[in-house]
Image 1 (spheres, helix red, strand yellow):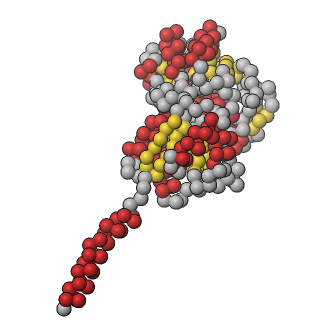
Image 2 (cartoon, one colour; image 1 turned 90 degrees about the horizontal axis):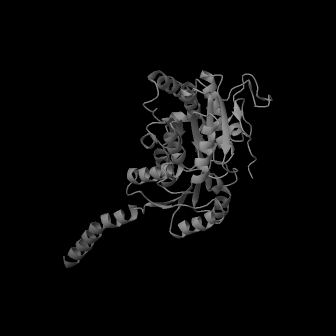
Image 3 (cartoon, helix red, strand yellow; image 1 turned 60 degrees about the horizontal axis):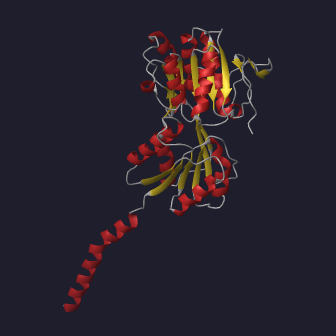
Amino acid sequence: MQRMIVVLTVALLIWSFCPVIANSENKKEPLKIGFILVGRGNDMGWNYAHNQGRLFLEKAMAGKVTTTVIENVPESAEVERVIEKLIAQGNKLIFTTSYGYLEPALRAAGRHSDVIVMQCQRSVPPSVKNVGTYDVRQFEPNYAAGIVAGKMTKTNKLGFIGGHPVPLLISSLNSYIIGARSVNPKVVVKAVWLNTWEDAVLEVEATKGLIDSGADVVSSILDSSLTTVKTCNASHVFSIGQSADLSKAAPKSWITGEYFNWGPLYVRMSQSVIDHTWKAANTIYDTKYGYVGLCPCGKIVPLSVRKEAELEMKNIAEGKLKIFKGPMKDRDGNLRIKDGEVLTDADIGAMNWVVSGVEGAVPKQK
């Protein structure tokens, strides 16, 4: 009898601890995720958009993930050092968010096969198993922005300020003038390239120079459009921004812009890592996913123009409108897209030519 009591007592003890053991085994540590930004997370531009995506991820996946962000990392070997630091801190998923981060990111990832690196933009060879890329069709909202610019200009001269003449920006510039000329065939756009993503002094000089040349609408693709937009506002010239809605910063000049909505995409990718369904790939998302879009037009834009731009964005999202469809020639008259042909994402991702209507030299990328 006494032996039976002992056996029952031991059994009860084991049973009572089972839930504790099970809970201990089922409890998973949050996935640690690192973000690397080329600029400041509050720049109201490219880096701001990515940082807002990170904050969205933290809130949406509270308890499942923790994040670390490192700002102001130049596009150099410094990226490798930062990645190594994040890995040492236990981060297993790292988002490298600037165009020039790819090469150092690949070198660092090659030393850590258990860490996943997601590079924004560019593409990687299929042989790389722990690095993937993600991008959006940034050129699509620029087409609709071009429609607004083409309708709003009085001088038929548009200005464009680009950071680096990389295919991503060249395709956006082309899409912009194609959209503008679809509603105003007389429009031309003068492009200025700064060969830097951020330099406030150069941005002011470039904006004023374009205004002095007769441009009454100035758009820019830089780390942040804040400086160019404010300069336009002070000069009573229409402005088009990038990455975020800057209408409050320039109520007199803002007509529209492009925004990024990285948060839902970061949730999607992070969950795939947690679920062990992540696979290395070069993925480009079009406008229908909502990760990129056209900012609301400013109050100074007539309702009819807003509706036209919104309709074309809808047509693009539904696949009814293909921007880079032939026949299409470059500025020098060379046939670049044959009749009936539509450029692939790979073709657009390698674009190094500009269409008719673009003025200004396109320097070769070093």
